[in-house]
Amino acid sequence: MSGSSGDSRPLKLLAQVRQAIRVRHYSRRTEEAYVYWVRRYILFHGLRHPAELGEADVTRFVSSLAVERRVSASTQNQALAALLFLYREVLGRPVGWLARVVHAKRSVRIPVVLTRAEVRGVLGRMQGTARLVASLLYGSGVRLLEGLQLRVKDVDFGANEIIVRGGKGDRDRHTVLPDALRADLERQCERVRQLHARDCAEGAGWVELPHALAEKYPNAGREVGWQWMFPATRVYLHPRTRQQRRHHLHETVVQRALREAVGASGLTKPASCHTLRHSFATHLLEAGYDIRTIQELLGHRDVRTTMIYTHVLKRGGLGVRSPADTL
Image 1 (tube, rainbow, N blue to C red):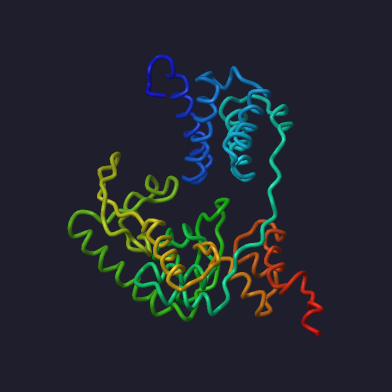
Image 2: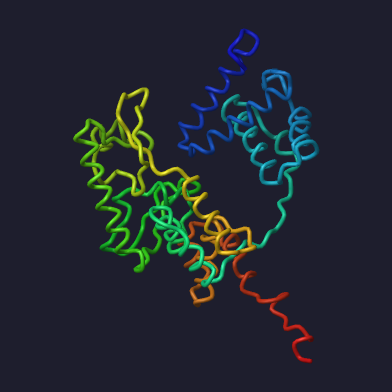
């Protein structure tokens, strides 16, 4: 895939895949995942063009993921979704035959949830911006990347809410702004304003804007409202626009800090940043909030996704009291 004459078609095809994804405003992570699987598919079949391949070739590739690489069902289905997109949206081929390829069945897993005391213990061992972000994940139920991609304008102190823009599935939603974090978030906003003022004085101060807003509003990328709530420590030079931009804090900064805090607290649960979101939903259910409200706060398309947290509430096997406890 180095650009030689033998693989120029796959390279051109990958560019077409990226263009088709961006036209449909899919997330950057989806773009990278789909391009990755299309590339793997091409390599698997010896650099043959996908237009020359068919149902049997897709089945061989998807099956090899499970048999040889032992990937999870969700990973296997993601690869299949990438190929479905390739044939339908890029190559313009009917995909009835691809629909017959068997999707891997996902295993039902109960989410890891921390108790309130465990959440206090973990957050108490974190510091600085990483602690504030982790507290926001638990206090508002946002996903890690949703929290890191918040702009200054998305935290509405007047309405006491946080607006998640372009969340999973490219959907906007409102969620709660915790009173306990209000003062910390106000201080964070002020730090961002001061940092932005220094950046502008040094000829920087730009941020990436979603979709085509940069063309529609050329100066919006330098407005304070569009700045990231949790900016990175360094600026970078955007190669196309030559703007000095600042990205948001990288996910690994928070993930690493949380992992260290979980280890220091002595927890044996495999807790991650997403565990805080699970804990948010479960603790709301315990407090008596209805499932539909929690669905809206989490941004789930289907209430059945939210229903998984009702299983966590059942203490013991299906809420049954053991006969050993009556002896």
